Amino acid sequence: MTDFFDAKQSFANAPQNNIVVFTEKQREMIETVLKILASFAPERCERIQERIQDLEGLVTSIANFPSLLEKHELTADLRTPQSLIDSLISNQNEGDTTLQLPSKATLGKGFLVAKIHTFSSLTKLCKRTPELLSYAQDFNIETISMMFLLLAEDVYLNLIRDTSIPEDSRRHLAMSLLLLWEHRNDQTINDIAPVLQSVWNARRKLAPAFGTMMGTSELLLISIQMDSQWIKFIKQKLGEPEVSQAMEEFLFGLSYEQILKLRSILKNKGISAIGRDEVSTFLGQHVKTDAGQDYRDFYSLYTVRRDNARSRRRMDLPGPHKTLEDYFILFVMQLTKEK
Image (cartoon, rainbow, N blue to C red; front, side, top):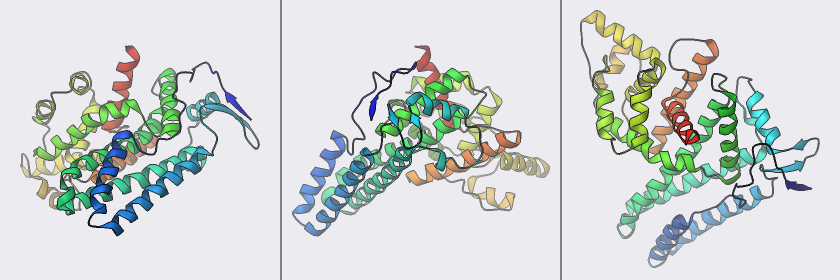
C-alpha cells in the first residue's frame, strides 16, 4: 500500500516518472549507429541490441522496488521520504554504507555502471570503425556525463555526513540525493559536469611546477574563464586553506601529505621545482601524476582523494577534509539556494 507523502520538505514538484533508460538524444545516437552497422556488421549490431535490452530489463526490475519519494509500509517499518532524510542526516557511523542504503539506490547504481560500460564500449567501437568515427565524441561525452552522476552520489553522501555544514543545507543535499536515486539524474550535476570536465582538461594541459603553487590558480582561471560559477568559486574560496589544499591535490595528483614531503625534500636540496616525471623518483614511491583522458582516470583519482579526505576528517588530521569536487558542488548548491 503506497500513497504520496506530503512531508515538510515537499516532493510535490518532483518528476514522477522513474529511471529513464536512455534520454531522447542517447536513443537517437544508438539507433543511428545500429542502422549504419546493420548494413555491414549485423552480428555486432545484434549484440548491441541485446545489451540495450539487458539495460531496459534492469530498469524494469528496479521499477518494481518501492519509490523513494512515496510512503510505503515495508515488511517491518513505515518508510517515508522524510524518514529516509532523517536517517541519512543522523547516520554518523564510519565505514561503508552499502548495507544502510535503500535497495533501489544500490540497484540503480549498478544500472548506471552498466550503462557507463555500454556507452564506453560504443565509444571505442565508433573510434575503430571509419563509418562511425564521427559519432565517437558524442558517445564519449555521454559516458563522461554519466561518470559525473556516479561521482555526485559520493559527493552528496560525503556532504550529508559532514556536521560542519548547517543541517538545513544537509537536508537539501539529502533531498537531492533521493531524487538522484529515484531517477538516476540530477540537474545540478548536469549543469556543472562540463565545468569539472573543463577543469580536468585544464589540469591535463597545465605543467605545474611541483614544489610551488605559483601561477597554477591563475592559469586555471584563464583556461576556463567562460564559466561564471567557477570564477566565483576561485575568487571567493581559493583563499581558504583547505580549499587551496584540495585544489593542489587535484592539480598535482598528489596527496596533501605527499605535497608537504616533496616540498620539504626540494627545499633541503635547494631545488625550486621539478617536472611530473621526476616526482616518483624524489618521493621514492610510484605516484600517478599524469592526467589521462580516460573518464576512469578522473573517477579513480577522485576516489583516492575522497578516501584520504575521509581519513583526515575521521582522525582530525591537518589537510583538506573534502575533495575539490565536494567544495565546488557545495558552493554551487549554496549559490542556487540563495537565489
